[in-house]
Image (cartoon, rainbow, N blue to C red; front, side, top):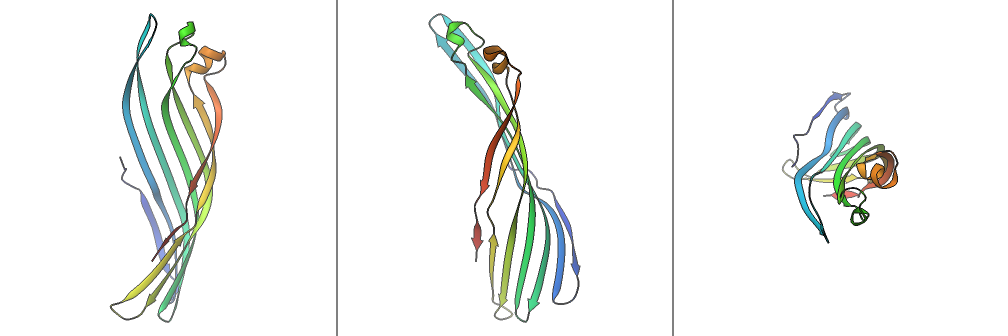
Length: 178
């Protein structure tokens, strides 16, 4: 489900032609969660395991903007700083279960975040009072997310800590609109 997004900022009219702004908004706020049960059977072994699967992706955007009017054309630029957080939980089968090691499956939980940057460009041409044409460009951005992965499977099957570090890559494409 999509969350209610937080946003705020301020605008300063330096002159009739020049405007500046600073803003914060939750650019992406996606969260889904669902219970999951799976029945495992191997020879005389049986197990019914329940998991809490979820995905919680949040991207916060902080931007400073400037726009300038050149007659009937307005141009704008916004460098943007993004903070990406991603929390994911899923189940993983334990291949060693049939040999008597641990449970049939375990829940894994990833908690990662990163900072990255991008920009927005925009232009509006006022052809008449009733007709305006605009162009917007949002740059792509990518980030190497870093964080932790937790699972009891690490301790049971490998005799290690239940928590380890993980990295993954996140990418958003260019968006161009007219």
